[in-house]
Length: 126
Image (cartoon, rainbow, N blue to C red; front, side, top):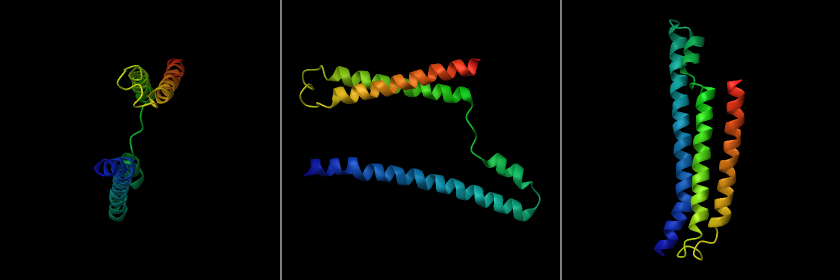
């Protein structure tokens, strides 16, 4: 009974709670920006266009995006390799039969991020 409740919590309630927290956080951020802009427009002391530009979310540089792709490539690749190797451990071989297909899938995603990283790096350097 307790095991069933834990699996329901992990697979259903926890992802919904995470999405709700992220969504509420982004709504709060947008509402705060809107209130600041409304006050600036009402006071007429500040240029609203410049203030709106300053309050926007900062854009990431191409180098930051490139580093993020490399980080994702390493994460997916290492987890994929670890899951494939986990299937060869005798205690886990028959317990979790999904490790090899999932490991191969994660490894493929990691390799695709590596390909994107190298192609984008070449374009940024040119």
